[in-house]
Length: 200
Ligand SMILES: Nc1ncnc2c1ncn2[C@@H]1O[C@H](COP(=O)(O)OP(=O)(O)OP(=O)(O)O)[C@@H](O)[C@H]1O
Image (tube, rainbow, N blue to C red; front, side):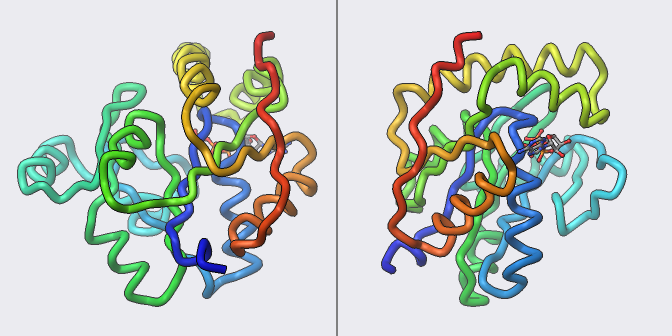
């Protein structure tokens, strides 16, 4: 069970279902896991709470935090800044919880250079067509933003094809994906999925 105490890092393209999987995990295990709440300069979506989903900050504040070396990793993504502070990860670990990070690719690359030693878990769409549909159906993006996220997704998936990762979870049928994700999060030794072709 040694893996349980390593942070769990989730990565995967926007719209693949990372937040949905996490929401379910936190509902089932309110005390076992702690989310590393990122800082962002993007505007809150309806229902998102400051300090829970993100620490929502201004660009000036974000730049101050960069200057103070507060971040383990930070990146600009889809026109906004995102970052993980040392303080948030530490706060989760001090509560005795497994820290879960939801990070985009540029951040993942930076994390590899640190001694955080997380379990790298790639959440994959079953196909590019389904990814596009989910982004469109979520209703939070304009068509231009969907296009931008899909273009980024293609690059992220190319990276994921070659990058070192501990687990791949295909978010096809949600209940199936969640059951696998739950096992991975609990530190169980389970056979994971293999990355689909994603060339559609
Ligand atoms: N297995 C699934 N089958 C069908 N729809 C799903 C599934 N999982 C998630 N969704 C839906 O797909 C949309 C995107 O999911 P979600 O917001 O969790 O993605 P995300 O990876 O967290 O994206 P972002 O990185 O942009 O926050 C949501 O509308 C969600 O309800």
